Image (tube, rainbow, N blue to C red; front, top):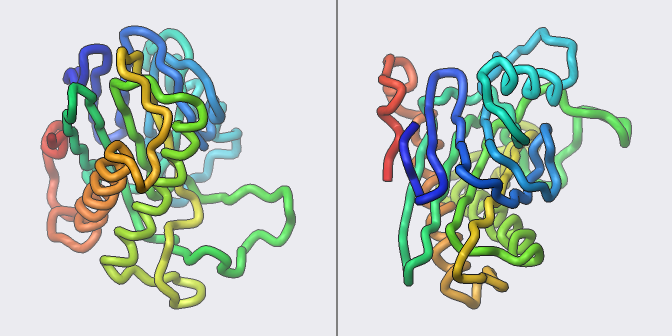
Length: 240
């Protein structure tokens, strides 16, 4: 495990990105395992095959993986078909507040918001796993409202990165705003600083938006590079 803040460590393998907390952290997320707002001891981004033949619910797959890995306590879990080699991490410390952004990305199901959906029932679930997964972690204590505002900022920043790169929707050929199966997690720290606002008018929001845009851009660059066909060490993409 590699420390990234005083209470957080990270491990990267070809199968997963595992973030461990020395004390439980509040996480606001769209994760398939323990999504919503929850206090957790672990956060995992699990790689699964693009054409996964597993018939069990994804949350069960993630829960069993955490148990098999010996991760005790509550875990929040995402899935992705993107290679762990696409993992990029950025960290900045501003006015004693750490901000960390972590991204894995693949573009196989890029979509523009409002595109025609393949699944035509309101309660249907996408068959493919998450593709652009973004984790934001800060040492500051975020209010619940700020955590939700951070989700909005991350979404805008991701869309800006795809727009800057000219990524097109496979359905409409319009500029993509994401993929059909993205996931986001915002991890609140324990302070002593408290952040109540993180929109575009405040410094925290400026830093968050820029970092997410840049880190998503760096992650999707892997899709178009020769590196995606070359073996790399597990730690190669743990960048700060």
